Length: 163
Image (cartoon, rainbow, N blue to C red; front, side, top):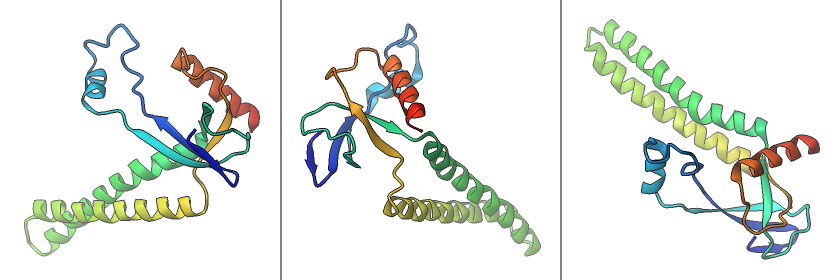
């Protein structure tokens, strides 16, 4: 954790790939992609309900329902916009006796763009309402977790207990 100010903690996390921990790491495409992209840090500002101090290692949790809603918003809405736009473009261009493939492509891209703008709007309004879905769970006893898989399972059980 970087700093604490007025009950708000600024937490910095390091994105890590789960790859590299299994026997198939040399032949796995996901492991290869993880080596190509740099591991970046993410910064969050969260309510400090656990009274953590600057320099503490903390465990953060992500609300499962929030994750599902966000996934649906980020993946399903753009796909729906693309498909609806493509079908409308094909149908509309066929009525005008224009090339239907061109209509499907143009209106599909237009529908995808409109859906991405809607995702941006909904994400920003959700963030402004304070619906981040991430919260501090507890202060960690060890600075570096040993087994990430066990740590994640433990955090998931702890989230369920708090609900």
